[in-house]
Structures are given as structure tokens and as C-alpha cells.
Image (cartoon, rainbow, N blue to C red; front, top):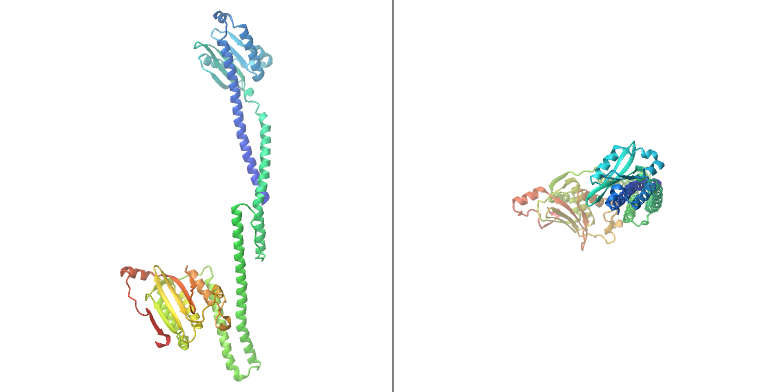
Length: 505
């Protein structure tokens, strides 16, 4: 992967450098051409100045140019030829001509043969009209440049200076820039490649570390963690997120192992008891007169095993991704009463007092009635289990805005500080020594999962005595409508602030 990234980055660098180099070459070439054309134009203007401002008398204009000027123009023509290979023509309106034709004929006769074209005459006409020209034309299939400058005295055009040269003399020389540019491209590519190599390696190092850590986790080593090895904030965040994920996976794995161990223990205990007593009755170890007594024990262990399996199946169904809720509006106060009626025998046996403190009765909530019934039954069962004889259980339901809060409170043995953080853990039971065989330790886990599915919460309250659990639900639509119709005033009826003993009804 590292090699592929490097190859892609280097290719991009080379492409960008070549593009930049090509653009630079074109720019330099155009600047070079403009500079050479400007130099030729400057030479033509200098010759035109000399031709227009010579010190010869007016008679000299009639019979020829000044010898010194002639010599200087001859020297200038030779110099321009050596530099640009250019033909120079100086002509005035009297038809007198000075040029370097003899030199051009000696050096490049093929070029001289191209000087009779119509385009040269057209350029001369334009210059004699007072216009400076700079044109690139094809002459016999070869590109040429023609520079024309008029020479003027007293605002009168006296003649013209024409310079013609092959385009190669002006446009050539770009190959001189090719090798320096190519060397620059190579140096930039090498420097960028080295910089990118170390940069990508610094990025890839933490990724490689993360890859190794992920592989270790996939092989079952959940203790592995990674140290931040990069200087980029993104790398730091990635390492931190990976460590958080690894910690959660480790916790989930520990929970899974504890869950399996607890399930194995909880299943093994009743099965061992059932198997032992049945085997004892079959082989005669237990006398026949004691069979009825031990059959009751077997029956109790069977019921315990049935409750455990039922709770496991319920929790499994709740944790499925396709687990759905059937949302309806129902009276939570009536649901509390039905749960109390289901436990009426145990309540009468222990002479437990039930207090119903409902702010509104009926109080409608919007939830899955069957699921919420599981929550209420589990909370009430726990309250009955841990409340001593002659104790008290208080059921509360109140509404605040669109949220209803329900509480189940008892004055039993309570929950110790060290047990409170684990109260919703699977298979955790408070004071196991006193409750062995009385519960599976899954009830509160099931309650918590049901509330999570509703998008609500269940929590353990701080109390001076006993234990108290509270859970929230969304208020039902029917109550909201009735409040709007009645101006927010509703009668309190039935069990508001009422107290009574379960067995007295």
C-alpha cells in the first residue's frame, strides 16, 4: 500500500512539474521572441534615426548619403547579419537604396531569393505611409519576420528601414532552455519524492501500528492498545478512537464471558439438583416415604430453571435488531393495579401495605403495553421479595409536560453502595447469600433494555430506606387532548393519595 501511494504521489508530482515546466518554457520562449523582435525594432529605429538626421547638406540627399553614415550603416548591417542573419534595406522616396544584399548573397543565397516577394513590397508601402510593422509571414514555405520603421524629419516621412530575417533566428534557441528545464524537473521531482516519502511514512507508521493492533484484536488479544505516533490531529483522534473501541470490545468480551459463565452456573445448579434427587429416588438412596418431599424440591428447581430459560429468551428477543414495539395509549395506573392483583397472595402473606400515589388517575402513556407490563411486574416482584413482613410498597405516577414518571418504592433491606453500580448487570443479584434460588438476576437487565427500546430511562433513586426505581414514558395523546378541552383542569379520582392494606379489599 505504501509503495502504491508513493507511486501515485510521485506521478502527480512529475505531471505537475512537467506541466509547470512546459508552461514556463512557452512563457520564456514568447518572452525571448518578443525580446529579439524588440531588439530588431530598436536596430531599425537607430538606422532610421541616422538616415533622417545625417549631417549632410540638402545636396547630399540628392547625390548620396554621408560617407561616415554610410560606413556606420554598413557596420550596423554586418553586425545585425552576424547576430540575426537579417537582410537590411534602407530606401528613401527618391528611390535611393542602401542594403547588405552583397553580404547576404555571399552568406545565404537561398534567403536572398526570397526577397522579391509581394509581402516585402506591401510592408514597404505601409512603412512609407508612416506605420511601423512587425509581421510573420511564410515565404516560399519558410516563416520569416519583417520589421519596418519609417525615418522622419520635420514630421515628413523621408524613407523606410526594413529588416527581414528567418523566423528561426528569432524563434530558435529554445533548445538551450530544454536541458536546464529538464534538470530542474528532475531535481524538483527528486526533492519532492524524498519529502513525500518521509511524510507518507510518518503517516503510514501509525496506520501500520493500528493494523497490527486490529489484527491482534481479531485474533483474540483484547488487551492491545496503541500509542499516538503521529503529529497530526487526525492521527491522534484515530488512535484515541481505536483505543476507545478496543476498550469497549474488551469490556463486551468480559461481559460475554461472565454472561456465559453465569448462564452455565445458573443452569447447572438446578439441573444438578434435579438429577441428584431423581437418581437418589431411582436407586433407592432416598426412601419411598421421602419421595414426595424431594419431588417438591425437584418441582421448585424445575420452575426455577423454567424462569431462567424464559428470562434468557426474553432478553434475547429484546436484543434482536428486528425487535419491534407495538405503541399504544393506555392507563399506567390501571396497569399498576393489575400488577398488584397478580401478587395479591404474596402481599397478603407478608402483610405488605400498598400505597398508590397517582397525581392523575387515569394517566395515559404512549408505549408498548406488554413490554411496560414486564417492567412493572419485575419491579413489583423485587419490591415484594425484599420488603419484610408488615412493610410498605409505594407506587407513584405523575406527569410533567409530555413526560410521565413512575416509581416503585419499598422500605426493605435496600441496596448497598458497592452494589448500586452493578444493579442492572446481567445475573447480578443483591445479597446473593440471602436470595439464592429466588431470582435469575436478569429482571432489571430486561427492564433496562425495554426502556432503551422506548428511548426512555430507568434508574435507581437515592433513598433513606429501602430501594426505589423510577422510569419515564411519553404521555398519551388522549390525556393531552382532554387537558386542552378542559383548560388543563382534571379531577383527581380513585387512588390519589390513598393508602390501604393489600388484603383489606
